[in-house]
Image (tube, rainbow, N blue to C red; front, side, top):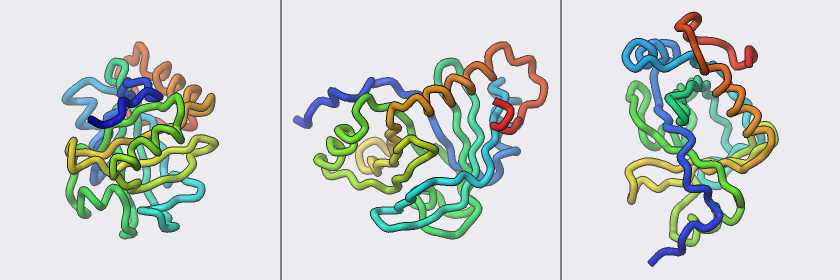
Length: 179
């Protein structure tokens, strides 16, 4: 039996999808499921990016909204560089990519996954928050994103949630700078 994940809060905060067009996918989510607005972050800047342990920059944009208490994240990769996104979906393909959890003890949780034989597909720093994608596809058919529990990520996620409460359907795609 594998060690029980004692440091993780066991709450999936996000379901993420690789898409070909953020704007088109966001419109589909809004029209089909009523999710919105989506907050767009273009050409995300990740500090110290590593793909499977090697330095590797990836040009990608994201759009995030809320479906109840769970974020819906859409990811569009703009470049041809290898990435955790291209590991699952070639250019032109779309689909479910990962779930995300915020970890009470990020480093302990990373080590727990590594000790089970999982590889970090990607890791870096978003603002002041460490994060990584663990390649768990062999067991759960998707990746797991681990996010360090920081005031920065909590403030960011709370702003997204607040921006989606009582949304009236106007301006379904907005800049994250509006948060």
